[in-house]
Image 1 (tube, rainbow, N blue to C red):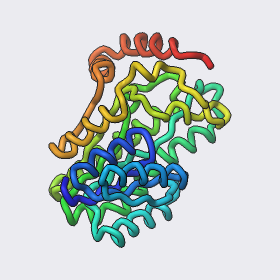
Image 2 (cartoon, rainbow, N blue to C red):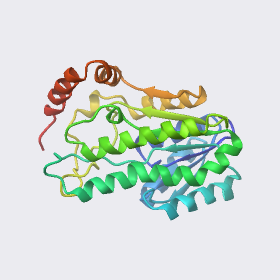
Image 3 (cartoon, rainbow, N blue to C red):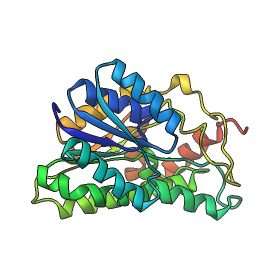
Length: 265
């Protein structure tokens, strides 16, 4: 990964920031994006202190123009793009019967269309360099999770897109990775949208019992180096995917019972 140019959307916190550190310490030149300038500045300062070559670019992945400008900035500053990690994402928590459908649209705009926009504008350079496109998906992209209608739908759509892209680019030397973390300690649940679009504000799950963002980033980094096709993380995640494929009726019951244990507030 030395001297590779790596773009990480949503790179100012959580898994994105951990990935920036992993690639940066390996000698990559990193560009991170996010919607909050203060968070970006803080992340850049942290990474620079660790000797990492990094730039920040304020961008909203749900806007195509921002993604086009992001790709242009990476080329202007670093001269190329080798790896795009589509990490920016948002979650939601509400039953489908109760959720404002605009919440689902917002989740799709970020988690799915944001990946399409970023990939479209980075792809010419990635093809030229036989680089990598990475989608940070989820176990929820293999198994629908109750209370996560928009999130699961967006990740199923993402998995389908990455499969298509991988097949279309089969003869080009481009690597496409579908990375699916299980429950990982991050701020995504605190920022999840409620049924009316407000921020949830706190996690309904025991964050301290989850895989850390650093552990997750280490696995993803290694998968990019090895040019793996799919990465499914945590024992719970692997079991869920396996059960859903071979014993879906049991998976329905187990997933229902597991998600029903979440804190109601």
